[in-house]
Length: 107
Image (cartoon, rainbow, N blue to C red; front, side):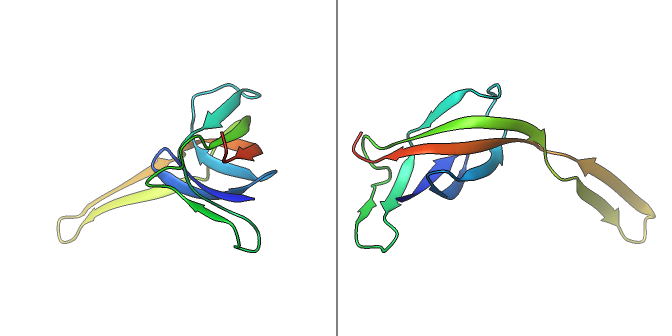
């Protein structure tokens, strides 16, 4: 069973047992988390498809916060030509690694 979930403004295609990297969810490592914003659910062959409007009622995805980490370094450059202005900013976003345990579309 696959599902498309919305979490912190991003959409992810998930399956049971997957590990996904998302923006920081402000939970400690090992904490269980339930995602209620399931947009779509379908099986491997595509025969059974459930589409929400916008979300599937009573659908839940159970996951565990495996790890809190920092992401890759991002380089941001501000530049104005002919004025000799250049500024470089480095940024490392905080991320969480979620392990999907169970997808339940019936509630």
